[in-house]
Image 1 (cartoon, rainbow, N blue to C red):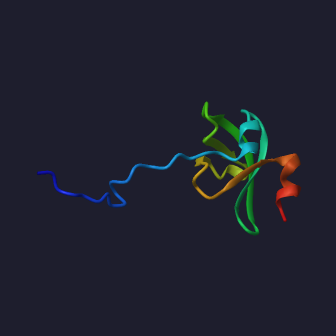
Image 2: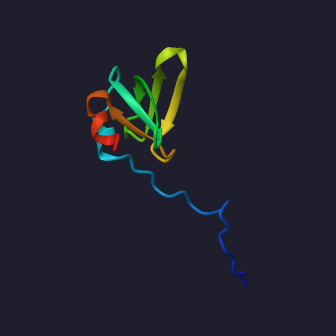
Length: 88
């Protein structure tokens, strides 16, 4: 007879990560602002974008390196010209 088992957090299926609609506008070479937390942001260039737009490589300004950001990381990426609308 099969035993009843509960899925623990380590065994649970991952939930679908869906990027914000404005992430779908991002293309290689775009100048963007990465909104890390209220009051903390960084500028950079989009270096690469996955086909589903769920992950974006950003080359940060000032020699701060290149970082892969995923839509589930709790950050927001906005085009430089749209950054003022998201600052509030």
